[in-house]
Image (cartoon, rainbow, N blue to C red; front, side, top):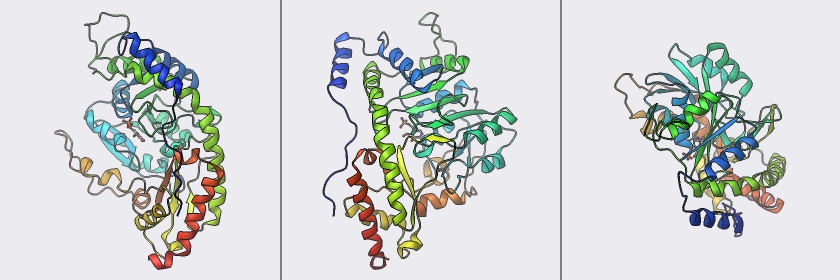
Length: 390
Ligand SMILES: Cc1ncc(COP(=O)(O)O)c(C=O)c1O
C-alpha cells in the first residue's frame, strides 16, 4: 500500500500572501478596489475574449449568464445530466426548465444527436458542459444552436485553458461561465466569472452581477433586476497570482496525463475518456476513466474504487447519481409547468454514473512520473485479486 500523499491543492506562496496583505491594507476590500477590474482584464486577455465579468461563484455565473441572454421563466434550457448539480439547478433557480440530453459514450460530453431530439418550440438555450476539462463538440452544438436561433452558455467551470482548434475556449458561445471554487485549476477558494465576445451580453451580465446598475449611471439607479453577485478584492488578488501559475501547472498535467493514459493500456477494463480531434488542449481538471466490471470479475464500481483507495490511491467514483434522478431536481416544482423527470431515460449517463465513470482530480496529475506508475501498479494489483473481491 502506498503511504506517500499525492500533491496537495491549492498551491500558493509569498506572492499570494503579499497580494492579500496589499488588499487588506488598502482598505478597499470590495467596491472601489482595482483588483476585480485587473483580473477581469488579465483573464480576458488570457482567454482571448473581449469581456470577462467576475462574480461570487460558478453557480451564480450560470444564473447571471442565463438572464443576460434573455432566458425567462418557463423557457427550456438543454443541459447534460452527467455534471455538477449547478448546471441544472441554476436553470430552475431562474424559473426556467432544464431538459436533459444524454452524453456520448466515449467522451461523456453532451451528445449533439440527443440535444436535437429534445429541442421543442420552447427551447431557448443549450448549456454544453466541458466535463473534466475538455471541450464538448463545439462545432456541432454551435451549428445546432445557430440553425435554430438558440443561445449557447458554455459551462467551462472545469476547463480553464482548454483549446478547440488551437484557440482557448470561452468566447465561442454567447457566453461562457467559469468557477474558481477550491478544487478548480484556477482558484481563490470561491469565485466565478463569465466571458463573452458579445459586448451587449457582457454589459447585461455586469449589471445583473451588480444590482442592476449601469457603469456610467448613478449608484441608486437600477435598470434591470439584478442582485449582489460581486466578488471580493481578496479573491481577485489571489486569482491574479494564481493565473500566473496556470500554464506551468498545465504543462505538468499534460505530461502526466499522456503518460498515465499510455500506461493504462496495460490495465484491461480501464480506459481514459476520448477527446475530440479538435481538442488541441485539454485542461485535465479531472482524469476521467471508464471502468468495465466484466474485466474485473464482476466487481462493481463502488467496491473497486474503495479497494483502490485502500492501496493509497485517491481514485474517486465521480458523479454517482445523474442529475435527473437527484431528489433536489426530482422534488422541485414550478407553478406554471409540470416538471416530471420520472420518465427521463438517459442510458449512457446512467451507465456512466452507476457503473463506469471514475476519476482522478487534477492535483494527482501534478505529481511525478513515479506517482503515475504507483497508480497503474495499484490498479494492476487490484485487478490480479479481483476474483477474491467479487
Ligand atoms: C460543471 C460545473 N458547473 C458549475 C459549477 C459551479 O461552480 P461553483 O462551485 O463555483 O458554484 C461547477 C463547480 O463546482 C462545475 O463543476
